[in-house]
Length: 252
Image 1 (tube, rainbow, N blue to C red):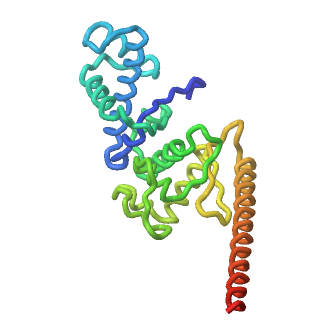
Image 2 (image 1 turned 180 degrees about the vertical axis):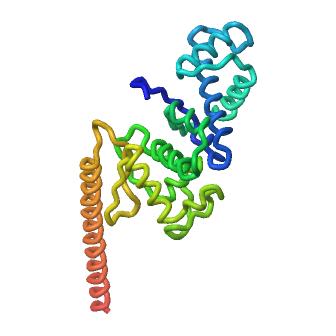
């Protein structure tokens, strides 16, 4: 891993089908990224998309940027352009480390390794630029499934609406295993203590477990105080209504 890590930003929806056809999904992500980088080069130089020397140069620049080596390939570029056009209205993006992409694209991985990458990218797509977030398992799994919004089902562990490929992980035990793996080997911080959902952050110079727990407990205290205030307000309104009704009855 070099210090200057490159990331590919792509629409989260492109992760759909990752568990069953990992290589094809990641190849599409790479083609999309190369086409986007060439598009940036063309915008900078004032060119238009044409099959000429400029495109070859743009391809070389894109490959060099990501630290990759490959000969110019018009089919890959056409696929990348198609993906750009198809996803041009998408607003939810996530970034993947180019080293992770190449490793998962070219090396056989277990299903658990695959779902852990999905879990990590899902967390990143939720957190974005925020220091931490409060997440539910349904929301997390929905993002792992390439969905922008959480599924809405009755029951804590009712995950209808999640794709069949992810159903084996739609239970407390498997989700716990994924969280533990991300905590131990992916710099993910997770905290849950009698909370609905859990708090998650990416470990960094500005965020560690102590800070995450502190933020979670401050939020819990604030929530409890607001709840207590609502309960007092509701109790007062009930009391006033009772007094009002009693006065009306006395006047009869």
